[in-house]
Image 1 (cartoon, rainbow, N blue to C red):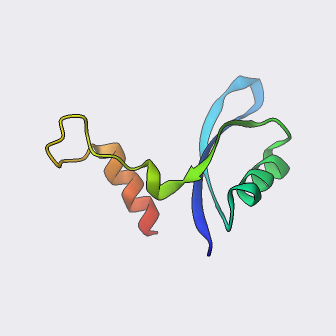
Image 2: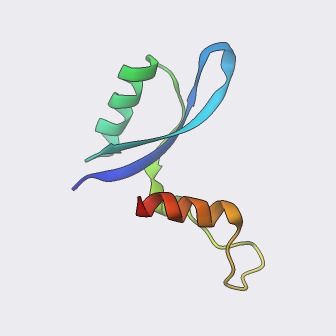
Length: 76
């Protein structure tokens, strides 16, 4: 089953960028990123994008704007 993975990569001049990739497994997602952006480009390894959405620290059930945006991306 294809999943959406979220990772942080290193671009030219040391800039970091969050990217999304669709792949079956962690290994395939990592390989795809390294093939596209170069070996050693991965700063934070891929995680399933749906697992990156969290509730805010207050615990009142409301979510932050960033969490809502990530949840919306998962629906696309």
